[in-house]
Length: 528
Image (tube, rainbow, N blue to C red; front, side):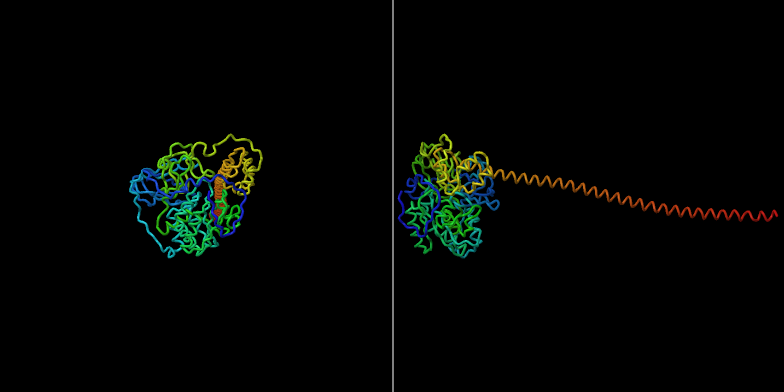
């Protein structure tokens, strides 16, 4: 593939590991970005971004216009969803989704009316008159997420307002087959740099670096031309073509020499990174008032007769894509690249915001699962690892369910790039073991949290029961004490009363005796 002879304008540092798989990019990057016929039905997955599932705001039978909000954010890590075309909501139900699990999730289904009619959009060329909060709100409400694959809501990445000095535009696009960012830059470099300028405006002014591999000479030239046209101070960092140079941590290290430590974020180093496609989406949202309803997708593979890059509405079923390019004899359908992508289980699943590529692989085009041989401890996986991990040890501990030991070997630093599995002569699916271990650890943590909460509730219940017993016992003790005192007081009163009565009785007896004596004296006198 043609390499750029353009010299990087900033120093380029080294990263460990990495591999050089066959690129397969020229098959799809030779023609302009085009469109496909509009699908008759769209399936919009409401859990198609990092974080919470979006909450529907439409009802069955409701008519919608293109760009209309059909689902709102539900919590901090969530995103707005918009109608990809005009039509009628025909279902809000679980449908197969574009996900490695092959499971179903809640989707909104829209039947197209064929008119593709937009809601009214509000353009704003003078974005500098908007406050930081207004710009972030527009990015948020436009449903923009990271288009490089992670789908992390973009407004959250931009929340931190202090300590950010540098914006890195990730245009490396290092995975084989994928060329959507390459073509987007070639055709829309001005808009991408304007999007970067909007991000820079959020921080008053940032140092802007665009990191791109040297196998994209036309894109590099387009950036240079756009930079001159806009009079922007943007540095171009041309990195050697090596997978996975487009990983966030890897590209930061290549361009700055800084390492993002475990548990830290690029923002902790004064950096913020956005994909080239994300910058373009931010430009469209702020300047054109357009929400994220479509994206550029690479359709490629030896079974794809019309390889190229197409602007595809979000929610377009995969079957519509393969029918539109007249694909028939394919062995595998991969969403994403061959390294980090996954096989599509349902042709009726709609594409999501993170869908950058569909590979329609012919027979024997992509390596098929082989019989796994025992590990021969060759160390090739360690050499290839871009995160400087020990994949062999991680494999043994994950296989043996020794998750604490796997964590001790920094399991969660693994970016699941697949470089280790690619070079493994024993065809061990290493990344699958790491994913299994990670999911098990996460599940164990959730179960521990649930168990801790249950234990706390149980202990609180026991304490409540004991407290009620103590309170009842104290109440009874006080009642008994009151009765005792009352009884004692009553006894004292009875004694006093008896004494008085006795005294009165004595007085009465004395009076009676005196009266009797008085009666006898006259009788004696008469007798004498």
